[in-house]
Image (cartoon, rainbow, N blue to C red; front, side, top):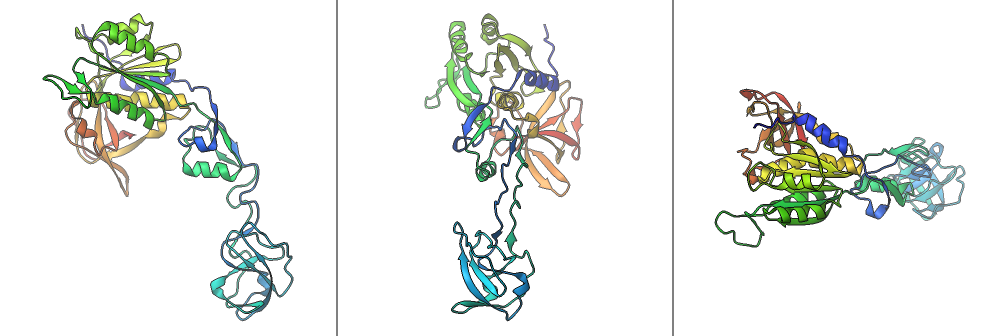
Length: 398
C-alpha cells in the first residue's frame, strides 16, 4: 500500500501551527546573547544624554573662530568630568572626545587645527556652529522604539540595551530538546565499527543543530532496534519541549518508532513528506511536546531538521522562522523530481543582481560531506526534467 505524502509547504505549515511560543522569561543582560526578545523596548532617555565632542580639541563659540584668532583657555572638559564653566566671548575650553560641551560653546576645533600657548590657544581654521558636536539624542530619542519583539539578540542589540539602562529583558525561553538515535547498526564514535555498522554521526549533528537554533539539548540517547528499548528512550524524552528521533521511521520489520509513538499517545500529524531527501519524515505531538521523526540517512536527517525542526524551535523561542528564507538565481541547472520538492545543498554568492547558488556536488542522501561548504538549501519545485540555470528559486539559509 502506498502512503500519500504530505506536500512540503503544507507539512511545514502544520509544524509551525503546532509550534506555539513558550512563556517568556526575565533574562539578565549578561545572559541574553542569542535569546529572542519578547517585548518592545523603548528608550527612557536620549542617547547620548548630552551634547558632546566628536574630537579632542577646544570647545569654542563659532563666532570667535577664524584663522589667527587667539582665545583664553578657561577650563577643561574631560570624558566623565564635565566643566561647569559658561564660555564668554574670547574664551575656549580644552575638551576630550566624548566630553560634554560646556555651556556657551557651539563648536569644537580639533587639536590639529590649533597652536597652544601657555594659557591661550591660537586657532588655525574657521569652524561653523555645530562642527564636531554630537547632539543629545543623535543615537536614540527618548520614547523611541529601539528593538521589536522577535529579534534575536546579538552583540549590537546588547550594546543598545546597555546604553538605555536595561539590565533585564523579557526573552523567549530556550526550547529543551531531547535527541534519540535508533539503529542496531550504530556504534559510538570511538569504536571500530564491525562489518555492517557505522558510527553514530547523528548523535553529534542533531544536538549541534539544536544548539545553533538557540535550543538547549536536554539529553542524547541511543536505542537499539528493540521495541522496549525504543519505548524507554522516547518515554523519557517526552518531558522536553521537542523530541528529535533519527531512524526507524520507515516500514521495515525493524522500524519500530511509529508503533512506539502510537503506544505513547503521541498524535501523528503526518507521516511522509513530498521532499527529496527526507521522504520518511514524521511529525506529531503530545500535549505541548513536539515530536519529530527524522530519516536515518545522515543528509536526510540534517535536511529535514533544517527545514522543519529548526523553524519550529525558532517559533517556540518567539522568532519568526521566515527570516531564514529568501530567493536566489540558479547558476547551474538542477534536475527536478516528479511529485517531490528537491532540497539541493548549495554554495551562496552575492553578485550585482542578487544572490546566486551553485550545488555543492553529488546530492545523494548518504553523502554527508556534501553539506561541507553549503550555505543554503535551494528548494527545487517538483516536476519533470530540469530547472534551467538562471531560474529563481526559494532558498533556506544555513
